[in-house]
Length: 251
Image 1 (cartoon, one colour):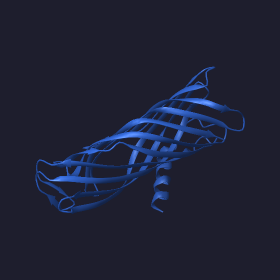
Image 2 (tube, one colour; image 1 turned 135 degrees about the horizontal axis):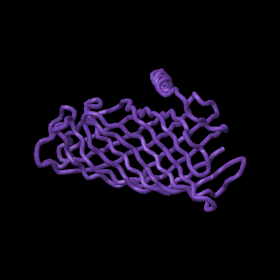
Image 3 (cartoon, one colour; image 1 turned 60 degrees about the horizontal axis):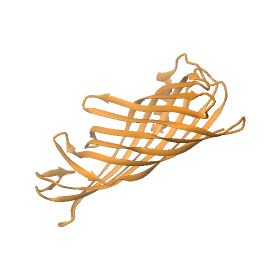
Image 4 (cartoon, helix red, strand yellow; image 1 turned 180 degrees about the horizontal axis):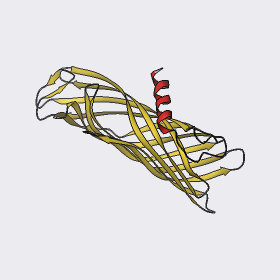
């Protein structure tokens, strides 16, 4: 119910004059993302520890629906998983979820995060040479963090969830007579001590392009930053980045 009300509120904010898609369109896409995580997290701005995280292959997919009604935004729903493990030896005491770890302790962590983006957007341009979209995204973030000291089995767990509002921009530039496109997409917000963005750039190639269905393969680079300030008592300055490969089907 809350997510339905949120989507309705975003739609109300975005109602305005914009050029709509001239045809109904359904897009289904996905990617495998080989990313490297880095950064810190903790229980406060001045109580964070830097962990060395393992590189991981993550999955991401989306569904988008476009229509010809000018005042009603198009909708895109995207899901991304960010799971990783890491470790560190702390030089000073570290407090996490009311558990205090002493200096010189060796800590292991499991950080499982995922988010679903609900995006409402308009198309300003939509042709073979240039596509440009803008809109608003509600990022529904869920994360589970476990920190453990293996020698003593002292551990703490924290579950984090929240809605992060973000701006959305997307553009595609077509390269005539080649089958290739260059694309870029970003969700972002920055205020107070918080900065969250999710940006990607890449190229796509049309393997199939006809009246019934289009099929493109993609290759690019993606970076996600989560500098969070007191989201369910969670503070972080984490970055995930790396190359991805994917595919998009357009009906």
